[in-house]
Length: 440
Image (cartoon, rainbow, N blue to C red; front, top):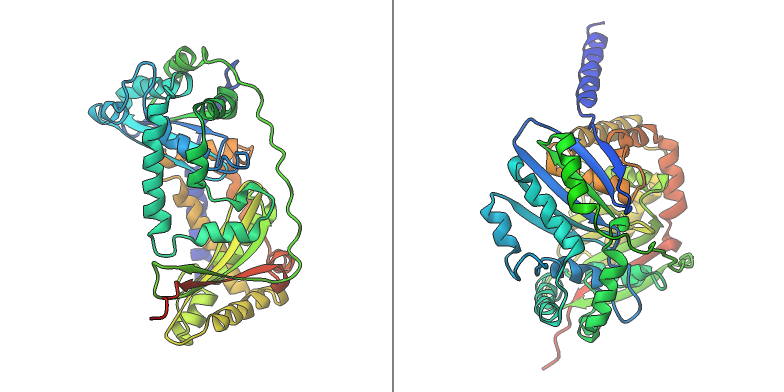
């Protein structure tokens, strides 16, 4: 009886904690199509202003890859009213910080300021959208910046070619086949007219969402947003019609070499559905079951017990059109890559053929509940979640109800989804090897 009482108390506390996590927000559209989301939290005198554009690495034409990532840099160059090179100085001198990042599906810019500088944050993002200076000098400057980033993060970084190799292996038609950063010869070949046309097509209010979160007054914030963003002209509707991939029906084996590594790696990759699909949520749970933490199936077996792997992990990488499910392993000593592949497949096969235990299922549910409780611990994080849920998932309310999807996933569903996507005949096996040294 005492145990049942304690369990009831714990469940009540968890429910209270989750209820307290609910994020209040207001959203609306300006006449030019810009979607606005406001979240008021007056607990700290900080405010995040952010704009997410629905443009990423996949939005390109053949021979002009990498434009979205390039623009992530280019749109800090300067504007009609911000002198070239002064953006970061303006932000830091007013007590703020800012950053940006690009994926295959979107580009995100944000600033965090003391709340008395909300007006400045809004002005900066409206300047970026309306008045960026795009000229040959800025293009040449940022071209060199991107090349240096590619050298540091891809060309000269250990295992830096993993995602380009996986993308090229899993996709033959869809733009996901090319790396987000693009190919440098494409950026070198781009003309000023190419770059201006790209800006005109994608960096328009009706292809973006503005989120303001933090210590704000809703009425005053709406007035500032109207003043700064409403005059920006609406762009043409962005349409996408990317080719569909043919199913992978037999195992593909490939080898790649990396001069920056000494320990080989194996990568087993599966093409999976886009992150809006329910099956993608189930794959999240499968990857957590297999490799999240030292008690997970792959880690416990291959690292702890059998001493076959230095590292082993299963990762569900979400993207808008197609996802990628990866098994990544580093062998111990003379353990072959084939052994890592077969041992990992043995654990995946168990998910396909048997229901996971009720105990493991409850551990998974507890883990996802805990992740949900902690997911919106900062106003900055809330701003990013609101933007992502609206722009990419088409449902802002996921910030409060996404946990309901994970709660509803059953053990039977995990088995069914593993059978649907994680079979040997649907995978690409990549031997990722140190570059062979030439014989003397």
